[in-house]
Amino acid sequence: MTTTDTTARPTGFVRDTAAVYVRETRPLVRDPFSVIFSLVQPLVFLGLFGPLLVGASGGDVAGTLQWFVPGILVMVALFGTASTGANLLFEMQTGSHERTLVAPLSRSALLVGRALKEVVPLVIQGTIVVLVAVPFGFSIDVPGLIAGLGVLAIFGIGFGALSYALALACRNRDWMFWMVHQTLLFPLMILSGMLLPLEDGPAWMQVAAAVNPLSYLVDAERALLAGDFTDPNVLGGLIAAVATCAIGVFVGVRSMRKAR
Amino acid sequence: MTNQPNTSNQMITARGLTKTFRAKGQTVEAVRPLDLSVGEGELVAFLGPNGAGKSTTLRMLTTLLPPTAGEAIVAGCDIRSDAAGVRRRIGYVGQGNSGGHTQRVRDELLAQGAFYGMGRRETRARAAELIESLELEQVATRTVQALSGGQKRRLDIALGLIHRPELLFLDEPSTGLDPHSRANLWQHIVELRRATGTTIFLTTHYLDEADQLAERVMVMDHGTVIADDTANALKASLAGDRVTLSFDSSTDAAAAASRIGGAVVAGDPHVVAVTAQGGDRALPTWIRELGDAGLRVVAATHRQPTLDDVFLALTGRSLREEAAHAGPADADADRAGEHAASVAA
Image (cartoon, each protein chain N blue to C red):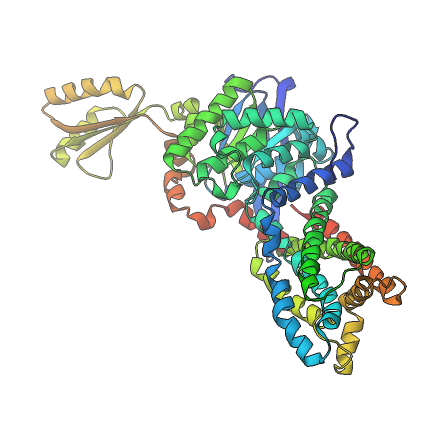
């Protein structure tokens, strides 16, 4: 993601996106521990909900973790990127966002550069969650993990872009941003089957899960982290991630183009 | 006046620039058709109370807000057809603090350089230069959220200057700063001007700011420019200094008023007020002559007219009072109306 200025520099959209991306990533490089802060919630679920799940299912710890950890990875992607719009919201309330609007930057780059920033913390956080689970019996399939993180990154870019679009729509009303955020996040999480299997739920829940892209993502992550690339769920999850990404970036870019 | 250079060196020209907002079925004329020209190298202050339309004008000229009607050429580029050209050439320091709160000061300057397509080496050198000239060395590796108000404002100016713009817009540069930081900021602006000859266009609702900084003052009220001249010429147009003479009795005051041309008994029946050119020189003469006539002056005041007097003469209202009433809630009155309108739209 680095561009050199000794050779011919890229121009236009690519250069602008790189400039925005580098700015967004710098605080992360300066203060890497900020990546770990947002891991608290997923780790709490892993440490406190995991044992309950083991007890309730009656299965062994390793087997339960193999089922549960992929769901936690999706949770990391969901919670990590859903609130990223709050940064933009804050920058709209100060003069920071306005400054970028007066700069000769393409509006699309302002959105895409920000959305791409989600990838690095997401991959780091996902890796930490998996490593934490290893001592308790979780086994890593390296190609599967890499592919799984890749699919999550695609989803994260799209969901982050949607969060920015929400921030742009809420402008000076940050309460509305958080209201929408809270209203959507937990239903999305529960109706994805990431915490408990939905097969035992009522029929309407299974219908809801069928239209929730996250449930496809969770199923795909379970297959990938087990190293099973041939599972048809993998394709479903990839489609869900790419669709989220396409819709997110489209909506986000549209909102940013209208931004003042 | 010679304050308007020849038309070939115009940095800003606007013709009939207009902005109306529609909010809740009401039409607000934020800026009425406005003609404006600023020559290369000028330092112009746009003075007026909150909500006068200053920021809206500024936001149109900086391409942040599309005008309802009219046209403007800024730094040689049309704001409608070549917004990108305008953006490349101007620097803009808005009302809010423009550094990201989790960003370090130097990092934010480097990012800003990249935004303007500057090479990495060039940006580093320029950032170092600005950090030094704007006294930010001590805080260069601190995050923006740890800076004082004055330091944040100096960073805003540094960010606006990274690409050496030929024209710099400053929107309410010293609002919210303590007196020491304000004086310090003004000094930096004056120094910048002296060193680089950058054209500066600033808005302010502070009289002293316009008076201290600007050679030329445009007074705006209710979306219209009601005066445009040098600060001194504006003050001189009021024809003279303000002198008051106080007496022991109202009969003495009335008698004195009849002896001095243009003098009136103002408010207090013991006090005579007069506006006169060279009032400071006339004052001792008046006191002596009135004394000879048996009218003893017990107190006298003399002051030169201020821009507040200019504003009072033009609008019948005191700008100083309006500034005092302006709390943080309506400091952004221009923008608040605009937000309301864009939400409604």
